[in-house]
Every structure is written in structure tokens, then in C-alpha cells.
Amino acid sequence: MDATLRALGEILLNAVPTFLLVVLLHFYLKKVFFQPMEKVLRQRFEATEGARKLADQSLVRASARVAEYEAAIRAARSEIYQAQEEFYKEFQDRQGGANRGRAAECGSGSTRGEDPTGARGRSSQSDPGAGKPVNGR
Image (cartoon, rainbow, N blue to C red; front, top):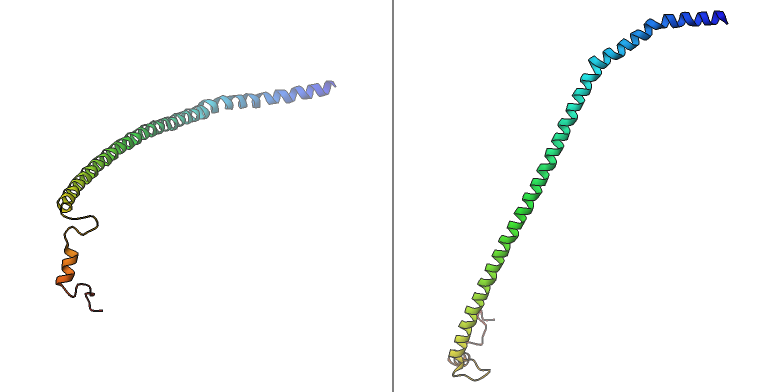
């Protein structure tokens, strides 16, 4: 057993320089390789997160503008429809007034159901070909 412990001690003694080299390599790589890489990755993450935040903000602004434009379009359409409705009512009032005036003029001398101008009876009496088709068939 004494020989085994002595052999184990020699193995460990021979492993100390390797262990120290591995520890030194660890700290060297940590300082030279991993810290700069971590710094670059952090900057990259911040840049992408910043871009995402800016994109989210621009989407919010764009949706607000879209809502604003849609409200303006609805208001403009409403005004147009109101103006059209007013014009249509005025037109109907003018047409109704004109039709009432014509009916008053024509209705004074005629009876119900007759042609107020009497043109139907006169045209057929004065024109013997009034009931015939125009093209002769």
C-alpha cells in the first residue's frame, strides 16, 4: 500500500504543472476571448432590443395616425352625405313645388281622369295616322 501511495503522489506531483497550465489557460481565455465576446453579444442584444423598441414605438405611432386618418375620413364622408341629403331634400322640395304649381295650372279647367291638356283627343282627331306605327308595320 505504501508503494501505491507513493505512485499516487508522483502522479499528482506530475499533474500539478498541467493543472496550473489549465487554470492559467482558463483565466487567459476568460480575459482575452470570453469577455470581449460577451461585450459584443451584449451590445448586439442592446442594439436589437433598441431596434425592437423603436419598431414598437413606430407601430404605435402609425396605428394612432391610421386611427386619426380614419376618423377624418369618416367625418368628411359624414359631411358629404349630409350635404348630399340637404341637396336631395332641396331638389325634392323644388320639384314638388314645381309639380304642385303645374298641377294647379292644369287642374283648374279639367276634371278628374282626363288629360288636362286635351292633347290626346285633338292629336288623334287632327292626325289620321296617329294610331299607326311609325315604321309602317
